[in-house]
Image (cartoon, rainbow, N blue to C red; front, side):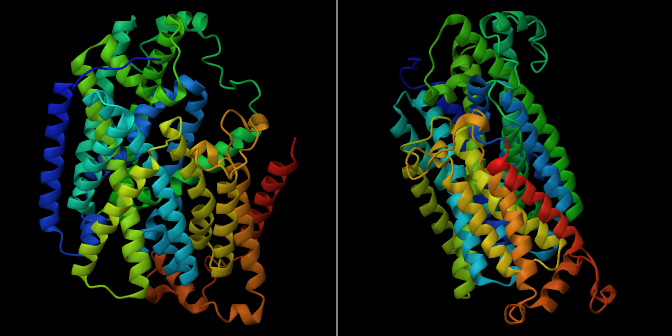
Length: 556
């Protein structure tokens, strides 16, 4: 596809400039209201459910999602539906399994939780290292998509678009902190919904959809034309070689990964109460689902148009399809809206990722070795976020083919590193620091070793597992996630029975911590409480996960 827009798109520049001004002013107001590190990281824990819901929408509907879903439907067709449902179910796992206990523990991040729950500085450092790497890969996708927006906005090539757009995003985060990010994310979430809904309606109307005003169902009359042009579009098993392990990998990678992604966890912590945090997630899920089905409509339009017209699209340019469809079939106003939605989505998600990076370094690493004053934390955290953003910009100069690719890989790594410690650590007192350290290392290594070139072309050390039998996108979570559960459970069981190692585990402290995390008042916690202490459940889970490990390695 050789389509390029020439010159500066004045309407788009004006709209994005107005949005940037609004976001920066909001961030500056927030900065003046922010007097503590908790205010910077968690918006003072004062965010209501509706605001949090739209902030969650904005965090989930990243620029890579906003533009990348259309590209992935073009590349994968209906398989993306399975992946997106796994993502959404991951939020429910988070809400049910550990959102409340994490809030009661008062931790900002997954790394903070590891340190607090398992009383291990080594565990904290390992968790912080993985967390920062995950967020960098997550933000790489956003920067790539933002670069595409600025390409069409300014009529420049990819690299100048990357640096201009990237620096705008990084400066925004540095000025506003999490308070500005949280309130702006709510606005950005609303912009995302509107900026997808209206242009997709117009695109489908231009292509001939009968019920274009209901874009997620309204293109039914165009299905025969699609089946003639692209017969396998609705084949869920496309390509035919897709194996059950692909679905297993999607389940473990996407469902558990979404539940444990660091900047999603911070949305629970920023709510006023646990109850309001859960309400916010449920309301956010509704709007996320709404935008997901809209992207299926835009993906349908993109595949139909390129197939009927015989247009060749390079994979690395497929993320621009929604922008191009808006420009060709509707006009400047639709293109400006899509640009605004994509920019808002990318801004909010990158901001969330940079805040997590800043939190991890300033609070979890430096803060563990040197006690910083509130003023020092407020100065240091934005500096760390700024430096992290610049690093991400340079990493994105050589991006993955699809913007969504490194997001998927980052989520799979998160599932492999953090899910077992989060679930088992909250629900089983016997989980200890030895089990969690080896679980994170082995789960993370297995995930990162396989398929890393899929996430970023520079990772040439990765072998990339064969597409068969793992489907069109190999998912290392098929092995790495269950392996992390197996290691955590059985290493904990063994070390709890070795006196010299068990003596170094502060069980009295951690047992009391778990009781309090589940909401039990201290006066109702009996000495040697048996709650959350049984080994039967963990052993059963460990054996089930061991079966999945063996099946991933040796199953047909």
